[in-house]
Length: 314
Image (tube, rainbow, N blue to C red; front, side, top):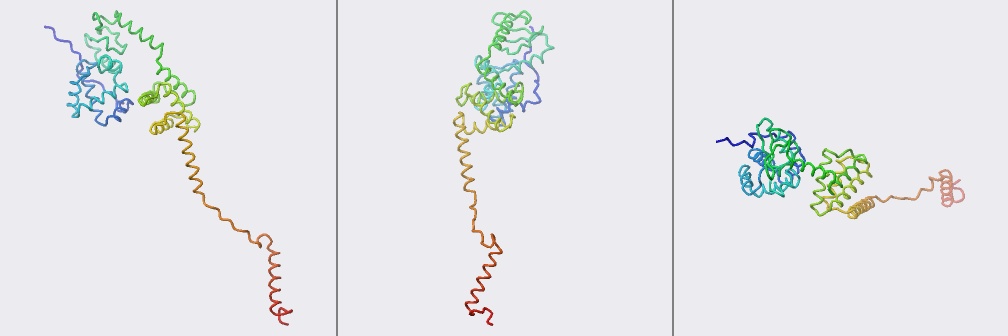
């Protein structure tokens, strides 16, 4: 009897910047510190069994919760957040209830390069890094070698067409990226700024803004940073977080809040002013010589009246 082909891995690579990954940080912020343990447990289940994906069901939720020592509900909430921030691929999850990602698949394919045979499921594939002689792809009909796989060619063609026709979200991302780059914020492509902008679109969508409204909101924030001569992402992100926390999602609401703040500041400044003490300027200050002469004459006159015509009593 033939020995069954090994699918999973005995160990899996974990990126050194795993905890710095914005997706991971957002999951931790939403789900707490135990999120790291749950994520690692999920990855271990993925790499251990099928190698590049795992079916998400109640059994997996129980197993992971039991391994980590937490509640199943906590694991379920984390998976929802992980899919939302695209730590796991959303399309594959929604269609097949499967947890996987392009990065997971790429690492699996790299780790199995010395194996005689590696079988992959076409419907779960997200990566094109499968042009290797030991890889076969199980499609709808047969398992065939990648070099002659017609389904793979059709998929690549569809992906190419998709890239040529960007979605609404991609168009607005390009718009805000170009706006920031042309106004001195630097290039958002392939870095933290770009990732954060994508997350802003997700957060704004959750509170009910359309993609267009989110784009206009971000650009209005950039305009504020530009007017304050602070063209850097950290400053702009602070403006956005402040407005988001105050639920200021329209231009009118933002401008109204600015007017209220400025009015309050002016009123405070008015009441903080101390009254200026004003006193009449002494007569002697304007004409000291004349003032002294008049005073001397007044004194002599008073003495004359008291002593008669001779003030000195002669």
